[in-house]
Length: 451
Image 1: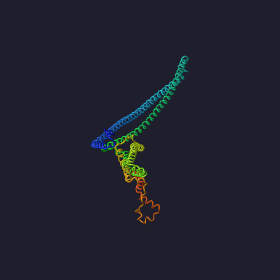
Image 2: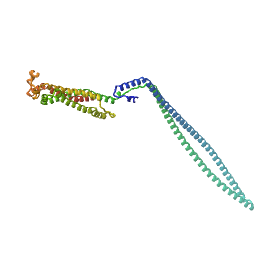
Image 3: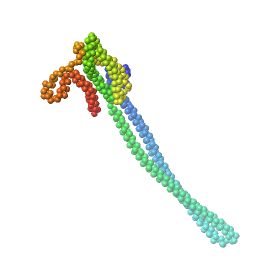
Image 4: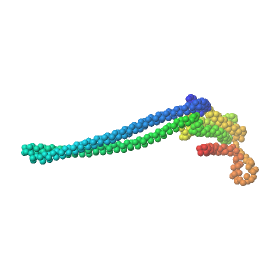
């Protein structure tokens, strides 16, 4: 989240920190209100979801109950249909058997009638011989006609009996087939009832489980606690803190190293100008003998040192303000995700540094030149006499001195004889090893923190 009007301030400035602190206080003032609002919002959302789930459950429950009721009605209707079919089969069977019995009775009656007619014809045949010829011929014709009719009647009866048997067989087959269909329907109804009962049981279990979960959700709504509103600024970001710590380390180096550099530059300038003046003793003595004043002679070395300060200062500021920060920024860009850096000359720091280094170097030059110009021209035109050797303090410590060989004794005497050179060597080694020591210590400190 970006704070409104934060673009007016530099992120590294104190005014930006104060502005962010004021905004943080304002946010903290509404913290409780926002926490309550968030809790109410969470409860409302959870309640809406629970209500939606409850509505969906009730709709699903109604649909399932409707389907179960419909299935139960279908099974009941199927049972009624089977019962009606069984009754209808029973009725039709009784009706068919009654019809078969009537048909059989009719056939039996017809057979009896045929038998009676045959008996009568046999009687007539017994009387025919006693009749006159004319009546005998007529009676014979009637008997033949009767026999023909009986023959037709017998064939008709046989036909009726055959049809009756066929009808009985077909009827019983149809009834048997209908009974098999009814038994199959009963089996399907039994299977459907079992499946319906299993579905009802599964449905009831799912409904109980869903209602239990729904009740748990309702209970959890009442357990929703008041949320905690955390106000996190950039100082809560681990990457930013790490970056700031790195920049603080570089800033600490920047506070210490200039002092070391000023001291080293001063000592180097003192040594360089001392050697230059010593090498040009004869020229200084000649110029002084020719009538040049100390000020005119000294200006030569002051201009030389000043030019060196200005040229070195410009080159150093270009490197320090542009090149080194760019290199450091590129190196940190490998670790952090950052935008491009905007670099510019800081004239205040650059001017102060240039003035201080000029004071140190030109001061060292003036001191060296003034020390030589105090001598007379005749003395300056002669080579400088070497320093006289004196007894050193360590010679008085006999139990140490007597154990030193010749080279070590000469080294100790030169240390006390050329104090300035010894000091320069110490400062140079300190300057060389201090950054290395700092890097080793800093690396060890980071590894300890990361562990």
